[in-house]
Amino acid sequence: MRRAAALPAIALAALSIIWGYNWVVMKVALIHSGPLTLAAIRFALAPICLLPLMLRTGERLLPTRAQLTPVLILGVMLAVNFAGTFVALRMSGTGKTAVLVYTMPIWVLLFARITLKERLNRLQLIAVFFAWAGLVVLIEPWRMHGAIVANLIAVAAGMSWGASVVYVKHLQRHGAMSMVALSVWQMAVAAAVLSVGALTIERGQSLVWTPGFTVALIYTSVVATGIAWLLFYYALRRMSAGMTGLGTLATPVIGVACAWLQLGEQPTPTEAVGMTLIGIGLAMLAWSGLQSARQTSTTELESR
Image 1 (cartoon, one colour):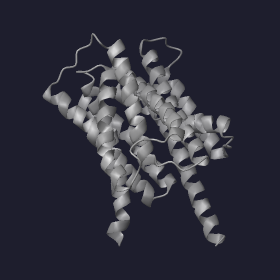
Image 2 (cartoon, rainbow, N blue to C red):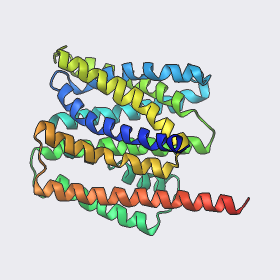
Image 3 (cartoon, helix red, strand yellow):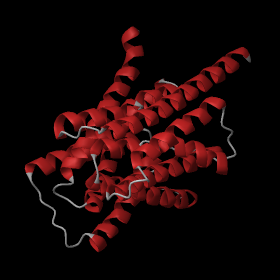
């Protein structure tokens, strides 16, 4: 019994390690490939890993006419997210890019406030303040250095990710939609969009198929996308959304540590301060989500 209860936590820990180390893997893969090309190949391969789960659960292999528009919108958002992520990762440091992209929960709060009219509690407002302060410190707008472009692109990737999460929440309010099927469909759309971009923009850039690149591609496509999403769904089905979010909070921290150990990308004192401020903000958001989930659970029990 205890072993069964521990499995979701183990899956979540494995997921954080896989996603955290994937930042180093993507940085290495970008040595041999253009950003759009790498992202296109990743999302062309990743859905194949989720197809067996779709077949097992009896999901439709193709979206209905009503689902087609949301799938196209989310696919384009996913393409923008990872195009920005890979471009920023190629231009800037691995750890800094990971932290900036993982400001996604902050943008979810703000976009949900604007579009879904969701109110922010006091802890969430404080979290937003810490995250914004960290963003300012990391981007350093007072110093017009070359890295500011990469930093802004990484933030834009996080914003696109946050917008897609809010859009999914909107879809869930207006009808259930399988997250597994939605993931497969939007990945396929993203692969198509990114392929067009790669053929148009990166035609002159060479794709070098070395053994190292092949291993990195398998890791980022199969392990960090296909298998990792299976672990995420497994944990999400057996744990609260707040706990699941709290568990994935370790991902950018692991990314920073791995980049430091393997690539020698030691954060500067300024970067360390910015990352810490953002980390505090994200931790507050995760704690707020966990408290909300507990209150909801308590209310449901009392009403029975």
